[in-house]
Length: 161
Image (cartoon, rainbow, N blue to C red; front, side, top):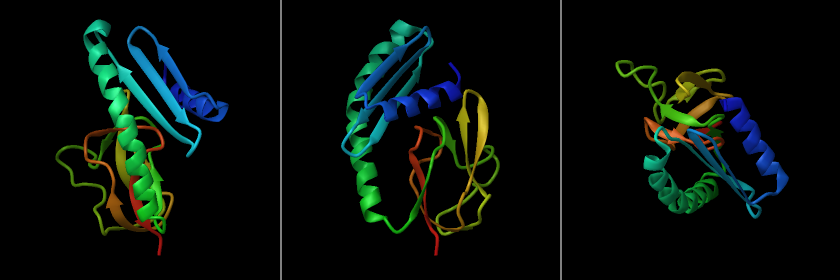
C-alpha cells in the first residue's frame, strides 16, 4: 500500500461517518478513528517487520496518545486562533534540517514567504520538502525534530500580519 492510497483511505473514512476502520496486511497495520463531534481524525500507521514481536507494542500505545493529541490540538487552536496553522500533508517523520550537518530551515521569529521550504517529511524513504503556502512570521514550531507526524497534524503557527 503506497502513501497516496493511505491518504485516500483517510479522506474516505473521514467523509463516510464511520467511527473506526482497521486494516491489517502482512507488514502494515492501519487504524483510523474518527469522532463526529469535532470532526477530528486520529490515524495510527505502524509498519511491522516481525508481526508477532511488534504487535503488543503497537496496540498498547494506540489508546492513550489518541486522547492526548485531540486535547492538545484543541487547546492550541483555542489559544492561537489569530494565527495560521501549517499542517502536515502526509504521514512520516518530521525533520527541521535538510541533512544532519546543515542548518535548520526556519526558526521561531523567522519571516517566511510563500514557497519557502519549512521542513522535510520523510515517508517511505522519500524526503518531501514542505513549502509554506502563506507569508508571515513563524510564531511556534509545534513538532520536535525527528518526530513522527500524522496526516493533517499541525506543524507551524504563522502570524500573517
